Length: 207
Ligand code: SF4
Image (cartoon, rainbow, N blue to C red; front, side, top):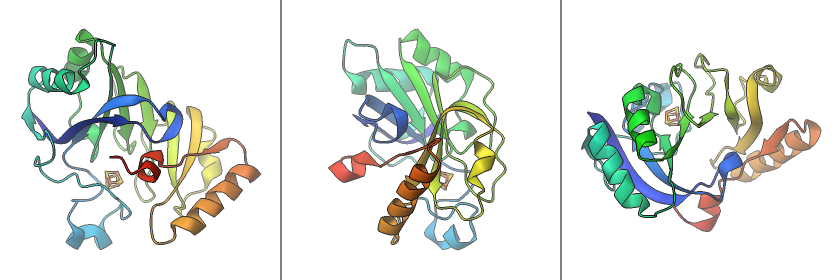
C-alpha cells in the first residue's frame, strides 16, 4: 500500500511544464526531514515549505496501485489523456514500477519531482530533480534539474555537466525571497544555461 498525503488537480506552476493541468499525488514521508518543526533545525533539508506528514490531506489515505489510479482518474475527470505529477515528501521512497504500469495502462503520462537521493530504475515520462545541499545526489540525469536558490554549499557549475535538458534556478521562498529572486535573476543573466523558475501557483494563489 502507498501512503498518500493528498491528491488534487491543479496547474503545474514550476519549471518547463508550467501551465499544464495535472493531478498532483503527494506521497507521505521524506528521507531528508521528518516533516516535524521540532526537527527542522537538525534536518538535512531545512527550507521545506510542504506538509507531507501522514495521510490526512485532501484525498489522502492508503492506496493500492489499482485504487490509487482509480482515484486519480476520478480527480482528472477528463476524456483527454491525463498527466500525473508524483511529489512529496520524497516520492521515490514509495513509487515503483507497479504503480507506473497501472498509470500507463490508464493512459496517464507520468512525472516525478524528486530530491535525487534515490535512483529510478523504471521509466517515468518526465523526471525533475531538485538537489538538496548536504545530501548525496545519486540521480544525475533527467529532464530538468531545479535548484532552489541559494543553497550556499552548491557550486552550480558542477551540475552543468549532468545529463539534463533544462537547468532551472528557483528562488527560495523564505523571508529573503525578494533578494533570492534578484540574485537568481542576476545569476541567470550571467550564466544563461540557467533559466528562472518562478512558483507561478503561489503568485496566482492556487494550490
Ligand atoms: S527534500 Fe523536498 S520534501 Fe524533503 S524536506 Fe526537502 S523540500 Fe521537503
